[in-house]
Length: 307
Image (cartoon, rainbow, N blue to C red; front, side):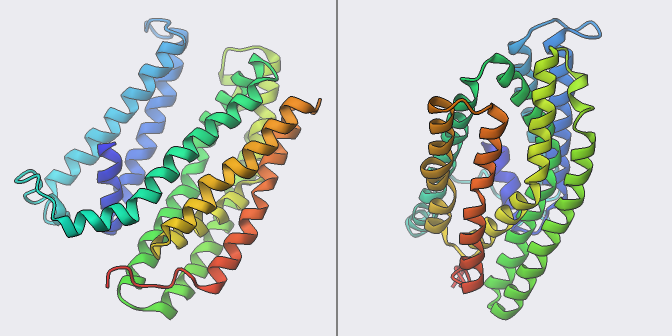
């Protein structure tokens, strides 16, 4: 949690390179030690699921060390770190502002994570091979998803600074260009991901069915990556203007009302294969694209939350 707070603060201050580098290092550490500890390679103990847990925790500690050490070595750039531990007192007025703006975000992240877990549970009723395929796919997807996640964060930073300076017209123009750039970049990345999808599952010691499912999960995710890039950039556009209630409805409410409902209904009451269900859940996000496009175009996010 602390490393996320530090990384978010750095991004709001305009420092995007370090959090991105730390995130990439964390993903690589997770990938490497998943391989070493799950299967016991190169002298490491074979720990199975426990090895995956150890790898995940280790990667987060490495990321924390990178972010924390750099932050405290460059306090001239990171003014918020100066006197950071001198007092725990937080002014009541600031606490009120944090609670008003932060509570919807807290609820959003909690409900969204629960929604993702519920989606996985719906897919899992099709068998253990589906779970294995999803785990392989998600690991690879997280590597490629760094692209649109980083670009979405950049939208929040750049557009948020323009809004804070009261440059509304420039903020709108910049936002449109950054959303288009994000979609373009992710289209190129998705093409590479789609072509390489058959190769990634071969790295894992599992059965042929799980590899085949993983391959098609990756391909489906690659197909919808430009859509996800647009959604992510739109989401952070709305957040940059302080529309936390709107993003709460846009994100976590949608996943529970629409995505989970579709996955639950199709997995329990139809004989559709899991790949078709997965693709339909992804396609349902097109509704969010339409909603996000309307909200961004109407300019409901164009406000200076600093003043």
